[in-house]
Amino acid sequence: MKQRLESLKQEAVEQLGGVADVAQLNDLRVKYLGKKGALTEILRGMGALSAEERPIIGQVANEVRGVIEALVEEKQAAFDHKETESRLAAEKVDVTLPGRPMTQGSVHPLNQVIQEIEDIFIGMGYRIAEGPEVETDYYNFEALNLPKNHPARDMQDSFYLTEELLMRTHTSPVQVRTMEAMKGEVPVKVICPGRVFRRDDDDATHSFQFHQIEGLVIGEKIRMSDLKGTLLEFTRKMFGSQTQIRLRPSFFPFTEPSVEVDVTCVKCGGDGCRVCKDSGWLEILGSGMVHPRVLEMSGYDPEKYSGFAFGMGMERIAMLKYGVDDIRHFFTNDLRFLQQFSRI
Ligand code: PHE
Image (cartoon, rainbow, N blue to C red; front, side, top):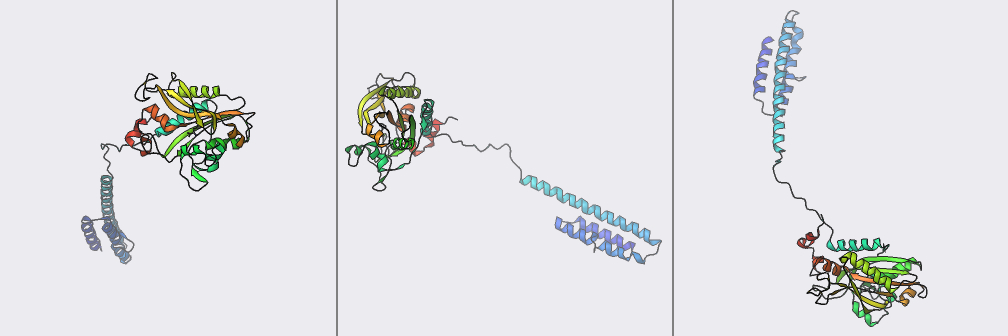
């Protein structure tokens, strides 16, 4: 029996010595140390031994088990170590590689200008109103004193969706919507930023879509001087404290009297240069006193209330402020253009 144990030990040591992987090691562990393994098998015969022999053989058996167990453990540790090594090698990170650059977006220059204008008017107590881009003929024209077949409609040729629905040609319909929503209450003091559409040329200064900001104030005893003071305050905040404005008579069906407003040239300050075509002035917006018929149609008594309105093109303001020479830059999303306006 002792001999069988010794040769078992030898065999196990030999086989374990040549073990190639964890699976094989497990097989050998079961084969020698398992419940139905070789060692157990031999020890089962212990019952037949005499009382003197039993402890001697028992000792040998324990020793053999100890040797095999130690070897199995040693091999297991070696495999574990190897596995950790190779995992570490596979997951190795080269911390000296340059990082991937993070690109950061920024607010579109037009939105920057819109936000700036909004802030100026909010500072003067205005609130912001909005309206739909698809408008009815009534709000876009009729309620603004532009009846069907009125020749002034030609100034704003549009995209029609149906006979009655069109892409709004200006933000002025928001004036009407605001007055209706206010139900005759005063004061009305809103600005309405938004996108507008016109069938127009497509060149450096015209586009079929652009943005406007509308302004509307209604109350008791609102006068032309209020309009002038408001626009002077606005243009000075927008273009600098030296800015002057000039009001020129004009025509809009929804204002009476109507004026066009010029600012002193942002480039030369009024001396005359290429930008202002030597006039010293740049046109920036249309405005006037709200026409009595418009007030009446929207539920305000023109005998009691008066008001002023203005509308300006955002792209034009942005182009003047930043010296941009082509309106299409705002819509073509060339990063070389946009990145110049990054504030970050
Ligand atoms: N809606 C006019 C336009 O688009 C501008 C305007 C607004 C004029 C308000 C007077 C009053 O040309």
